[in-house]
Image 1 (cartoon, helix red, strand yellow):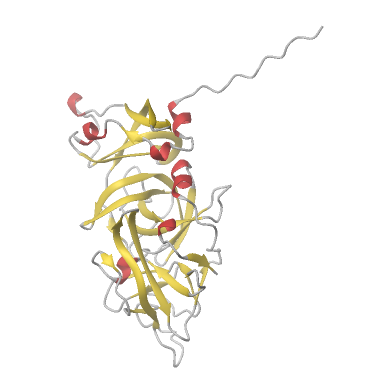
Image 2: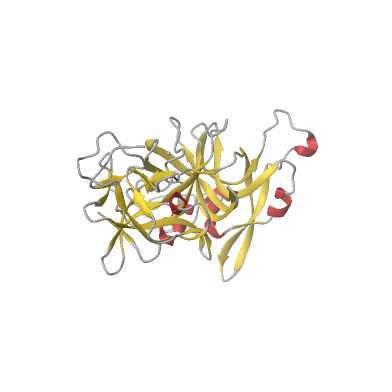
Amino acid sequence: MTSKKKSPKKPRKTAANVLSGKRWHEAVIAEYVKLMSWPNVERVALGWKERKGKVTSRMCVKIYVREKAAKPKRDETLPRSTKVLIPIGRGLYKSQRVPTDVVWHAPAKFCAAPGDFLNPVESGALLGVPGNEAGTYACVVADSAGQRFALTAGHVIQSFPGDIGSEIAVVQPPTPPANMPPGASLLFGRTVGGFFGSSLNGFVDFALIQMHPGRSGVSSALDGAPGNGPILPSAFVLNNRIQVTKFGGITGRTSAVFGGSVPSIVIGGVTVTNVYEFVGLPGPLFADQGDSGSLVVSVSPGSQGGIVGLLFAVTPPTPDALAGRAFVFPFERITGFTPVQ
């Protein structure tokens, strides 16, 4: 006589389990207006809970405050949990309480500052417009006809929002170097398009450069890392606590982890909508001025090498993010262009 085997217990559904499914990026913070009305609160967003300087695997509502009081008054103590509405299909939502996470707010700034003359130009090299801020070359992209262009952040080229002007001269490096080859030109190319600002699909910040005859570019980074992997969709990035890397013209190769989505934030007077926030991993600053345009790539298993987007802004370090925070817009919004080697 054999005994029946007990069926394994199904995992208990928790708020974290529910929200870590495939649709938490569509969840709505039910008490958003109420949370924003608290004194000292700058912004509220869904994301991954942080603890002792590390991003955990627990979903939460992140409340960014100008200052964390050691002993807040009773009427200034933010709630430990709040309600979110989770889509369950057919236009229906389920109400669920999730923990909150009070995070230091630091004002963000666009991080568009010299370098070697390179030919071909590799990802991570400094470039810029003479007399303007410098930024970082991301990679080579191609349109449907196979025509190739160099890519960087749009605000590196022009400081005001809108379509990026055409025929703007871009040099690499931004200032004449000591190792300039005889007879070579600093001119890397001229702009042919791009956009800086919020679009119907969210914020974008990119410029396309037609490379000058005699100059060329590749997508591999200065340290040899490839930069032409598949483009990761926003839903995948928002649903996974992925780690990323980038090679910036100023800070070089650094790493960060996805912290959350940013529905709206004002940076340098420009309204930025629907972008990613990444928290620098322990170590040097994840990014600084001059790193704008850096290609951000996943290093997590299952998506390793996948392209996340372009870095465009950073915050200074705070007590809960010693390597700073960075803002990235999804690469998928650069429609009609594919990264190539």
